[in-house]
Length: 184
Image 1 (cartoon, rainbow, N blue to C red):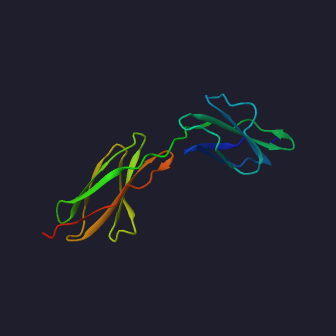
Image 2 (cartoon, one colour; image 1 turned 135 degrees about the horizontal axis):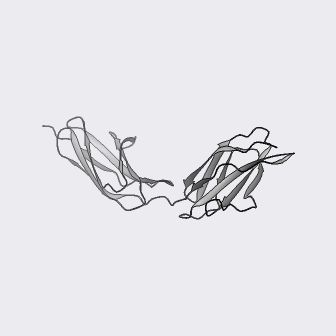
């Protein structure tokens, strides 16, 4: 008999849960079991026969918590079940909008935006000096609706965009806003 798979993890996404686990000695394939309450996995696997040490469950409903266990299978039979892992898939957050950028000094630009999603766990702030190539410059809490970007070069134009992030991933970007730091 193969040993039970170990280190099962479940990562939520938008209408999916991605599972991964450590390979089991002697395993030829794996079976994945799912339930909607702790230790309540169905006796019939949702996936079986795959040699991969991962599985993406796309037959889930956002907002429902799913519980998983995995077994290893070979010609001698099926192992005991793995540790249990759970995840709650979520929809992508709604993008922030009404982003504005206001220069307040020669080294600081203040940003404000409308936060449109209460499921956001953070807001990613990206900056560019040409309006084309953006790089993340900061991350703030999901309920935030403002940020002060400091340490900037005087009399220089900066472009910004923001997006909300939750367990399912990142929203679309907000509008792009720009401001030029003050000369003096």
